[in-house]
Every structure is written in structure tokens, then in C-alpha cells.
Amino acid sequence: MWQAEHVQARLRVLYPECRVDILGMTTEGDRTLDRALNEIGGKGLFTKELEHALLDGRADLAVHSLKDVPMLLPDGFVLGAILSREDPRDAFVSNRYDSLAALPAGARVGTSSLRRAAQIRGRFPALTVLPLRGNVNTRLAKLDGGAYDAIVLAAAGLKRLGLVERIRQVLPPSDSLPAAGQGALGIEILAGRDDLQAWLAPLNDAATQAQVQAERAVSRALGGSCRVPLAAYCEPRPGGGLMLRARVASLDGSRMLEAGAQGDGDSADEAEALGRRVSADLIGQGALALLAHDLGGAAVP
Image 1 (cartoon, rainbow, N blue to C red):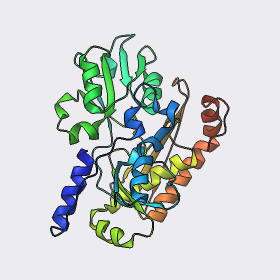
Image 2 (tube, rainbow, N blue to C red):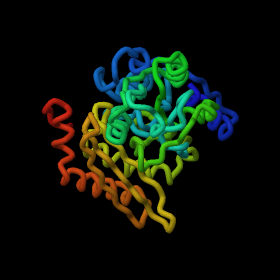
Image 3 (cartoon, one colour):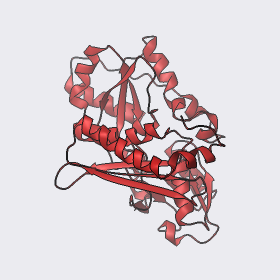
């Protein structure tokens, strides 16, 4: 809801003569909290019902956390704009400990992400990593209630909700590489809505768009979803261009494949090419076989 209200406020500033209403919806991903996302269908559970609202005319646009948007949109849908990125890193939250390294053996760490869980297990195999679902306030309440010694979640959500004081440590990407698109908001519309595309154009941040395009290219090549422990993070190079890093892990964190590359430009085509280079490197290291093994031998889509 914060995200929808943020976009609403931005549009009202741009077009004060327009009425911008919010159609609040609860998706299947929000309702089903007793199982991990990888067990119930993955990223599409946060977008499907919103897409139905676009199709039947109840809504003109849908606002998503870009990391929750499938790498391949269904036919008939496009991303009309990608907004300027908030902090893309993961955040460590605890009432007793200052960092992951300070946790004692056996400490319970909650996270909703296979990507985070695999990286934590790889660095700190003595910790007990447990699933954690719900919105930000629900997750914090579970921590405060004693179900976990610490939790790890996106720094962007805490900052947007004015909860920055709950962050004990922002995890550097070297320790916990973010998910593709983390920290960015995407606005989905129906393909062919040239009117909406034009109205949304001022909201689009070209730098963020290029960065997440590179990240999503890696994820797309490797079948990225909530069922895959895959990280991809792109940032601007000091002298211009882009730097992209990606990481694929086994579910238990015992195996970790990494790749990185730099590009001199930051256009959409160059970002896409950079993503393909990094994904090809990971595939050459055996990433598809690693992911297929953890998916029970199934082919990676």
C-alpha cells in the first residue's frame, strides 16, 4: 500500500487535474502465509490478481516490488515505468545481536528468501535458518515475540515504512548479494496503452531501468523465481558504465557459483548484453545443473 500511495502522490504532482484512485487488493502471495513461496507458485502469486484487474478494466496500472515480478511477463502486459531505486541491500534485524557474525551457534534466523537463506547458510553454517512469511510488520512482530533471534529482509521496505531504526546492520553485497530488481518499483500496464505509457514516462528512472534490466537478464537466463537461490546486482561504475555481479547457490549453501562483468555503456541493449555475459559465465560453471539438482532434477525453465 505504501508503494501504491507513493505512485499516486507522484502522479498527482505531475497531473493535478487528474483523479488518481487506489484499488486495494490482497493477492494469493499475501494470503497464503503458512508455506514458503517456492512451494506455492513463486513470484506470480503477487501479480496475477492485479493483472486480472488490468484486463477487466478495474485498474489502469499495477504497482509492484520489481523483485516480485516474474522475469517473463504474460502476453499483453508490459512494464510502463521503473522508478528510482531505494537501497537494494538486505538488512539484519535483531533485538539482541548486532550482526550475523555475532549470533551464537544454533541461533534462529528468519527469512522469506531462498537466496538469503542459501547465502547465510554458506557463510554461517552453524546458524539455524527458518522460513519467515508475512508483511514487514508481521515479520517484526514474530521477531519481537521470540520466534527468531534475528531476521533478514529488504532494507528498502524498512526505510519506506519509516522503520530504519530497526536495522542493526545493512548487509554489504559481498556478504548478501541482493535479488534482481530489489529496491525498485515497477508499474505494470496493458500492452498497447500508449496513453498510459506517455503519462508514466516522467516517472521512469533510466539508470535504475538499465541496472535492473541487466539483473533480470541473468535471472531470466537461469529460470529465476522464488524457487531459485539466485542473486544479481548491478551498479554504476565510477567512471561510467555498469558493473554486474551474480551468484547461484545450492539450497544448503554448500556450493556457491559467482560471476561478474563490467560494461562501458548503460543503454538498454548494453545492459541486456551484460546480463547475458554474466549468465553465460554462470552456466559455464554449471549453474543450470546445480539449480536442477536442487529442484529435484527438473529442468530449469
